[in-house]
Image (cartoon, helix red, strand yellow):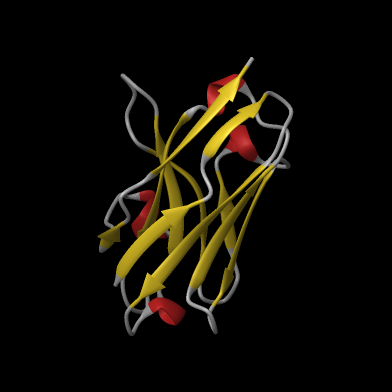
Length: 124
């Protein structure tokens, strides 16, 4: 599956952004999908993930502020980010686990496809 992210940008601390990932391919609806981020000098980390069933996973640092969702009819993955903080500044990547996967594969970094990333910059 090919993944294309959009929606990043510059926002003040406390603001909101919504990231979108458009997927093309045959297995989006059965794939666990996730959002990773990578800040300069840091390792890439899983921010949120969602299974085909709708089960979700969030990193502790974003719980209550970020919401992941998917539209299988439109092959779209979304990440609503509220109450953004300076430390949320990073490149955000959409990723697919592969056909018939759960979010464990994303937790272990065993992704099948990556997008090119979209930059999120939060000013303090």
